[in-house]
Length: 311
Ligand SMILES: C[C@@](CO)(OP(=O)(O)O)[C@H](O)COP(=O)(O)OP(=O)(O)OC[C@H]1O[C@@H](n2ccc(N)nc2=O)[C@H](O)[C@@H]1O
Ligand SMILES: Nc1ncnc2c1ncn2[C@@H]1O[C@H](COP(=O)(O)OP(=O)(O)O)[C@@H](O)[C@H]1O
Image 1 (cartoon, helix red, strand yellow):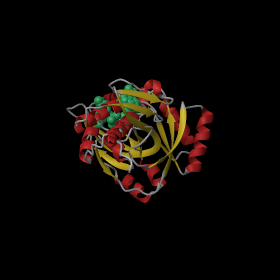
Image 2 (cartoon, rainbow, N blue to C red):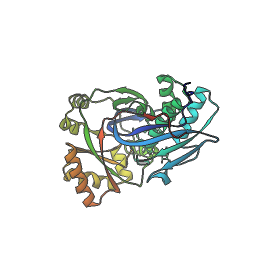
Image 3 (cartoon, helix red, strand yellow):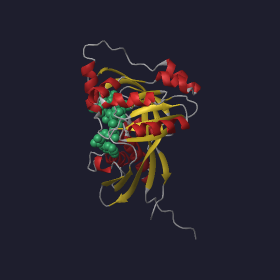
Image 4 (spheres, rainbow, N blue to C red):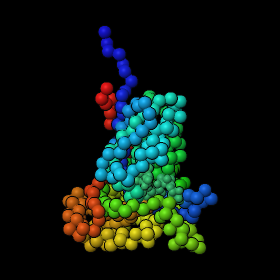
C-alpha cells in the first residue's frame, strides 16, 4: 500500500537583495509617490523566508540584523502572508522565520525581499496556485520594490517602480557593498530630493540607451559609465559620510560607484572577482564602512528551496 500524500509541513524560499543600476526620479505624484524609471539588478545576498503552519500568526527573525526588524503586524513578510491567506480564502495561521542576511534600511530592499519570499512560500504551503498576475498585484500593494523581487534578474521598473519588465543581459557582474548600519528611511530620502530639487523642471524619467547596450553586451566598462542614481545627492545630504566612502572605493580601483537605492549602502562595481576581493581588503584597511560584502548579479528572484521540512 502506498503512503498517503501529506500536505507540506513547511516551505522555505530564498530571496535576493537588489541594487539599482539606474534610478531616475520624476516629480512627486498626487498619491505621494514619485514616477520612476529604474533598472533593478538582483545580487546573490539572500534572506531565507520559511513559513510553517501554526496555531497563531507569528514571526521570528534570525541573523545579525534581527534586532532591527519589527516582528509585529507591520513586518512586510507577515503582511504578505496574510494577503495570500485572504486571496486563497485560507483560514489558517503560519509562523514565519526570516534568516536575514540583507541589511535593514540599507537601500537593498530587504523588507521587500521578505515580502516576496512570504508570498511565494505561502502560495506553495497552501497550494493556492495564485496566478502570476495575482501575485504581482499583491506584491505591488505591499511595496513598490516587491514585484521586482518576485522576478529577479535585471529589469526595468516604471510607474512607482512596481511595473517590471525583464532586460536582456550577458555575463555576471561583481560588486562590493559597503554597509552603513545607521540606515536611512526611504520616505526621508524622497522628501530630501524634493527639497533639493524644489522649483526645477523635471523631464519624464526614461531608461538610458547606453545602460541597455552595456547590459546586452555584458560590458563592465560600459556599465561603469552608465550607473546613475538621482537619489544619491539626497542620501549624501542626509548622511555626508557616504561621499567619503564612495571616494575611498574609487581611489582603491573600483570601476564605478553608486548609492544603492535610497542608501546608505554604497555599491562599487569591480572588473571581476579578484578586483572585488582586492577592493574589500583595501576598504577594510580604511575602516570606512561598518561591513563589506562581495556579491554577484544578476541572480533569480524568489526561489522555492524545499517544500517539505521537519514533520
Ligand atoms: C528607493 C527604492 C529604489 O528601488 O528602493 P529602496 O532604496 O527603498 O530599497 C524604491 O523606490 C523604494 O521602494 P519601497 O521601499 O518598496 O517603497 P514603498 O514602501 O513603496 O514606499 C515607501 C515610501 O517611499 C516613497 N516613495 C517610494 C517609491 C516611489 N516611487 N516614490 C516614493 O516617493 C514614498 O514616500 C513612500 O511612502
Ligand atoms: N521583513 C522586514 N525586513 C526588514 N525591514 C522590515 C521588514 N518588514 C518591515 N520592515 C521595515 O522596513 C524598513 C525598511 O527596511 P528595508 O526594506 O530593509 O530597507 P530599504 O527600504 O532601505 O531597502 C525597516 O526599517 C523596517 O522598519
